[in-house]
Length: 304
Image (cartoon, rainbow, N blue to C red; front, side):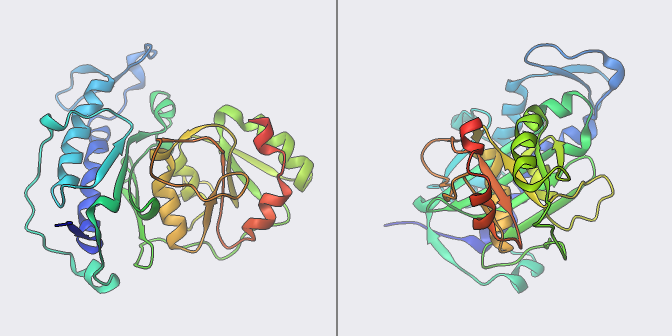
């Protein structure tokens, strides 16, 4: 007999998935530890000892977090930036109680367990983390139903700020009061800011502001009303190269819940099933004419 999952019950479990990034906060980053090494970086741990953080270390945290998310149901697929051995997962007990604020905002809704896919990013803005650019670092969890992002949680471990939203449910974040469509501020990855800048200024004029930033979670938050002084503001988020779906699912869910859009550069919806990568780049906006933005940027995908 098919198993059904209550999305309302799943939501309060999703933040437990953020535990996989919480070791960033107590461990912190010590700039005095010297340069990073290939494939790993050094941090100052709770006991004060230096330790290299490797993919296997992050995978251990992933196992704990995924075990917590899996606790609610057995059939959902979980995708993450790190490989997880399901035999070693740690589960967390839960009495299935639902916080009052979620009860008030979100009506009960059940979906088939096999339709649910969970995407987890244990450390978004990895490169920036190694450079001590903490403002860009987030941990993210997303729940998709039939490939469509439904729940998104974006957490900043160094400031303890968390944004969450559920499509046709509730949220603790909102859009800003205004956006500039004529000469938008465009936020892009630090690694290819110049590529987007050239095309964007040809399209919107020389006054177009390009904001290089790290982390897909940070870039989505830049489109919203975030009460943090070190959070930059942008009108459009553009990415012109291949990107993993665990990098963008949570942000896509948040924007979708608030009436915004995240699509490929050609305007196609991104499906969160199948492969773990998105080949078509992306453009994200909220309270703007998304279709018109896409039509103004016809050549971006060709430059990727």
